[in-house]
Figure 1 (spheres, one colour):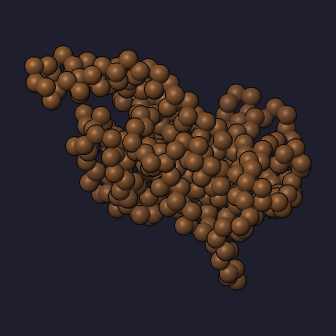
Figure 2 (figure 1 turned 135 degrees about the horizontal axis):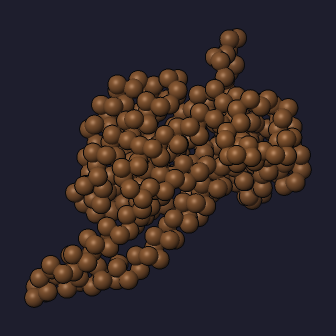
Figure 3 (figure 1 turned 30 degrees about the horizontal axis):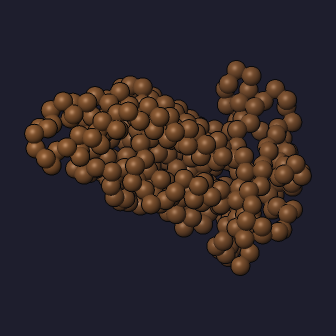
Length: 325
């Protein structure tokens, strides 16, 4: 995380290739650079970047080229609404792991009414396929999306070296997390994680399911009445809820320097995952020690520029500084 609270591991005489030190007060940024045509620029060097924090230029201390590996959590929404599409989800998830670099370390988690780590970090693709194949959809309601993102960030906090990313596959429908949105923003704001949500646009099918339930519910049974009323209310606010949830995921994406991918047809899911893999394969990483040493429980704004004015940059827009205890 930008302000990593874990002590740095002792330096060994020989560091592995592409090693990124993680120390207290080191701000780490993952950066994508695009040319005028929207294609990734991958040949830049440390001196091509300029970083500002609250409009004050910072000195870049570390630089990793796009070839450097990632540690990432692949978080899969397996709530009851995904039951009919689970085979496509698993196929796309397995295909995604194959498109990453051989040295990338991947963990897989499951999100529904509970949170489960299906596979801890590994680069063994066979092991990852087996773990994904074991996944089943929940038989209970509930989708703890915010809790799932927070848990993924916590898993990555324990990784001392390397770049970090969360890839979330969900329909964006949060409905049972204990983690509040503002708390999640703050958590990611203290993290160097870049967030890539792949969002399935299935509000139409959700509406159909609710309306079918209302239609078929036995209204003569007293126990059914509250559920029918709840279903009617859900239909009335469905559009608004989906809009809010999508906007919130977009906010988390923008603030961490990631990119949101919207999937209208599950048949396109593998293609969208391929785009995420391409993003990860074309990301630089920069790091600097902030000139501002205060601990004021504030968000600091970050701006990354490249010296070629024709290029566009996407990176974290800020980070949160915890108060000093």
